[in-house]
Length: 402
Image 1 (cartoon, rainbow, N blue to C red):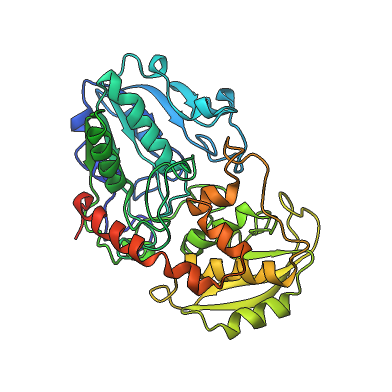
Image 2: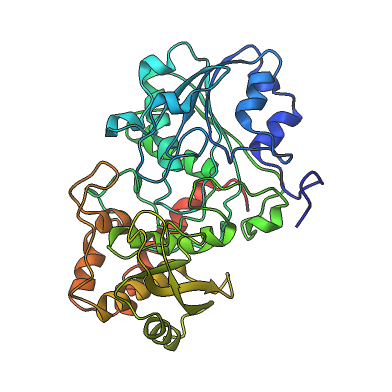
């Protein structure tokens, strides 16, 4: 991997905007949706670069979930005073109501262009791309053009995995009918959302400033770009690799490792025997992964201050590893070992009480009902094949990179 400050193999949309000296923004009143992971190759953040660019008038900044500075944990509302910028008006797009997830016409008033620079991690649940979609929907009736600065998908763009999202199960963790692992960049997602909005009679002017040098088979380390955690529990690329599956644990009373230094790689519960879980999962011989028995004590969130037994998910072959199938198998096994203590999460989740969290994450109640009926994970995942193939074909029209 290239050293920070040396020449990377990939340039992000922000890098290209800097290289052209912000020429396409000159003389325009600009709003910016951003967060700490929106940096150039030299770790200069987008907000700072925009605020000092010549002849660019930055009129407002919007912070998504976790805040403009990435300080808030998941599901924590971010008051606008916590998003305060010293140089420009700032707004929170993650308050304490569902309405707060979208910019208002008043907030967008007076802009000539809305720029979006957010680092996605390649999973339907990850909410930054939902924030982008809501911004497109808000900009459309105002005739406000949107520029999306593209960034690499850190887990590549060549693999698709997981079920589709069915009507009635849309939410902030599933704003569009995508595979769970969608294999697209945030710019390509913007083009899918633009096309579907236009088909629904809501045209929106979207331009994507692509990356250069990125290939669909690239993992993030191959880009030479610096990794900045895009959210508090996404500290490493390894986290992003397991996240498309391990985020499903949010829909249960099992710990997904939040409150530890290895979130999503660690998972378990106080009532589980780590050696038993690891032995059973390793006996399944799932591709590209080994399960290490682990005990850990979360410092916050689920089971805070209580020792949990479980496993750490060690990916040994990223190309062979299938995170959604792996975590489905792991979830089923942990439920089977202690069925009386396992429970689905029924509390409100991302401003939705019904359907419950696991159904929002899977994209329907089909998988939960199959798990409750005792069906094996292989049978459940077999139903995804046609959906994965269909989405794999449907996404091609938005590809910016071969």
